Length: 198
Image (spheres, rainbow, N blue to C red):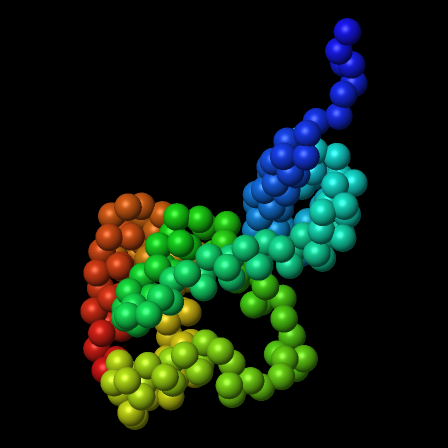
């Protein structure tokens, strides 16, 4: 007679753990986007994932660890964008498409930026993103008269415009900022703008 309480094999446990982690990350992404880090509730995240909230501590060490894991997931996806040979316009469009397809990431990015006190932020002249643009400037993709730090600020602003100024997007372009039509037109125009940086 078989043991009905037999433990699952190790591979099944690994797959279950991966599914649980992914479900918690997805639910956390939605909750952090809606309420920010301070307002997000682990009970709501766990309920959204259909899991016990104790698993948040088990897998991520708590709410802060879960938030960091959401950010790391975005960073790992972003790292794939900048493959050798990728132009600056193509790199920008990768981010633009990601934020357009997943507006929750948009909102997390904006909430995180707005929640930081500028007085507590250190100046980072060699921030990796600025250093990357500086290298592109040396390769001729950005004009010598432009400061890469300000170029980055412009690119970031264009990338999040549909979340920061949705009514202005509608007023000035006639398109719903979440629509495929806006995405197509904005991608074409923003790509041209980025190309003109040279």
